[in-house]
Image 1: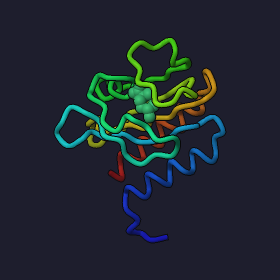
Image 2: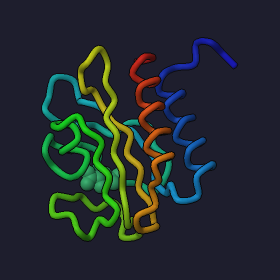
Image 3: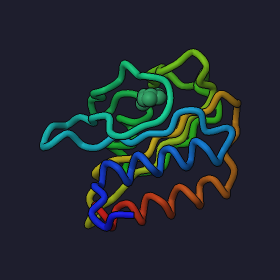
Image 4: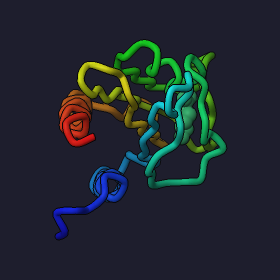
Length: 137
Ligand code: SME
């Protein structure tokens, strides 16, 4: 494997791996702060196409995590008011922030077709992953 594999390719590979390995991860992708704008931009992902390429800070689960810098687990999306629907099949979602040098620069977003699927192991895995990703960005 090439040591020069671009970051985008690495992130895409992570999406593919998570999507393959965890049956209840049904959309896996990254959003990153879009330059100096107060908005997120869609990065590498695996899953259905989404209308939400750009998400203003504060909007939806992703936009809220961009502001709070805290993991947001949504066991049942129907119970959320500030939520951007990507697919009618999505029942649950988790968004974990990615920090680089202490700055909240992006996030991993996972949607599930199962209600309340995420375990403590998922959260540990995703936290660890986001910490490691923060180091290579
Ligand atoms: N559901 C997200 C939007 C992104 S899509 O799920 C890919 C949200 O509420 O921010």
